[in-house]
Length: 367
Image (cartoon, rainbow, N blue to C red):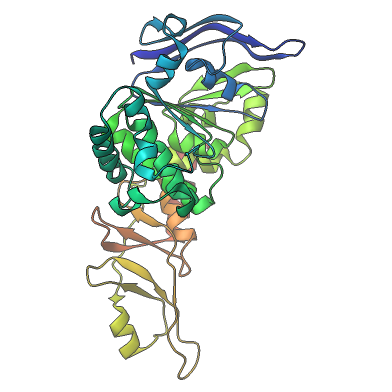
């Protein structure tokens, strides 16, 4: 059984003259795992998160972190012991990226030199070029700002990381990149992460366990994402998860039955010399990494055009990733790559769908 890092014991938050924002919350959050709070607006998920570091004080009940009551520690000290990432990144505009990341270590008494050295290391950890350290927040894209926000939250090496809808303000492509980056970081760092979102897709991608909050601040279901998709505990949870939860369930289904076929590849130079063919051609660089697809010949003398290839699939990933790769490809063939990002072959959309149908039949009709 997993060790609990954070525990809520009959916690209620009641604002004067209003309905309870959180009502009798009792739950244990596993150490070293990602727990996602999800639910519609006004259901108490952000309030619950903020009670962990006492940005909001509970009306009643007890919250413990690593066995200690959070009220036994001064609020400012408690907050500095945890990482916190918010929707807008919350970076200080007048400070450089490095100085933003170094904020908490400096507050904890670390020297400026040591804090900046740690900040420089963290740029690489969150996938940012070291040259960005001298820039200011306004000189960064939204996705880069959020990565800096994560780096700042990690700067003091806290055991607990609180994340309040951190990726909701960026576009879907960047959001997917940030989600994958967070999962990569978690594999390396094994923090206890509490993540708030209103997006059930994000919750099922990230969460080792998912807590679905209902209107009135009550916990409607708390379980592994797969269980919530497979067996919603109530009509409310089923409605919130949505009718397409069977598709989301593919994120937990292995892709063992998907065949990877060989594919002829061309480099950009070869494409320019040989021109288009009657079929789609996969264009790669000198290291066999995919660059895109060259469309079939459309007419005599027409210059070959290269179009993006959609998402990539790696052997061992889920059926959902396989389907995403196949359906996002202009050729109808998803590109499979090895661990180094080199082309391993292609997967056919029709075959992926056949495996999905077979998987549903094995599960006696699926979801």
